[in-house]
Image (cartoon, rainbow, N blue to C red):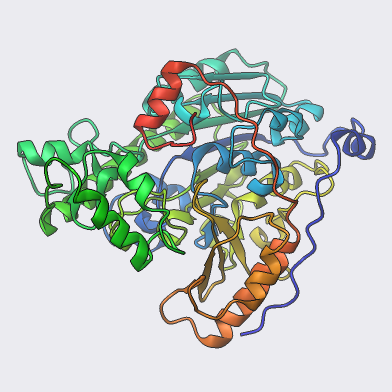
Length: 490
């Protein structure tokens, strides 16, 4: 398979140049916009995308009235930089989003552009990596968080309170976020055990339910930091050298890491499914709240996941170490006002960076020059031709893995960091599949070669490596982030 040349994606121009181009011309149409983000939500659990498990009845009904993108991919497997890519239409490397960088505050965001066009803008997030101290707050008139690592259960009432006080007659952009499927997966009854077939958990299973991210290769490790240190060994995070380093590290523990049985490893997936059903229920309540206020039919409603979650793939139960379908394939569903094109599914590969230009296109607003994403509106209305055929993703900071995903295959490179001057040449020269490359099982040599070329072209368009400039986070937030596996929270 040979892919056409990659669509040029130029570096972002300044907000000043964009503002001169845009001016303050009112948009010809101004529907309200509600963007709902389900954190750590895998696309393969959505019934509308083919999952045969009745986990998502509300999302499935919503999809029947909306345009679905069954092949949508996140650009990074970490919450804050993934959302920053959504709000800017840029890749994480464009904005140093792999770290919490104060320079991000100078970016032109979706909220900022919509504000130019008269929109009221608000965000209600579930704390953690999207708290006001760490999250992408730029451009929002109002940005507030609930408890750290909360649910839509916490953020929807906050969002509705803001909406009730919003000015009538002016359009609004409302971002609502929840960690409903983020660890820990155990949710309030009946959802916690809903798909386990159990009426209760043993003491060992109770411990496991709150420590799933510490399960590696069938053992429950006492500290994720141990895994963090060992996973970087070898060329790939899950290479034989890295697995051997993990095994060597645990031999020095005072007590051996307990073995997790196959049935209890399966239990982790069932607990995650319970969290999926819980998130689905909360999303259904949000839709009901919008309908009760007469804000449903005239609103563009977007449901997305910011990244996925490993559930035993490569022996891991966390999104930290791999960049594959488990950690990057996310739901993306867009309901147009009055259900236009309801039930349509766009078969093309798309990226979350495409959301910003798509939403601006929907309201007739001019996007900033130089963004990486492309508008999906033509595809939503039946003309998917011209969309880039490959989606690009990167792993969490510290894991130098980059991946190119087409409809039929994936190729992942691990080695030099994105932005290195040597990276494009190294990608083109390294052997396939080789020690630096890992191809999805079944990908043909021709597909691997095409994906390699696409990855090299993409890498050439990335800016040089930038010096990380970390934000000093409050001690309480920093501790909460590290507890939940955000190891870059210094």
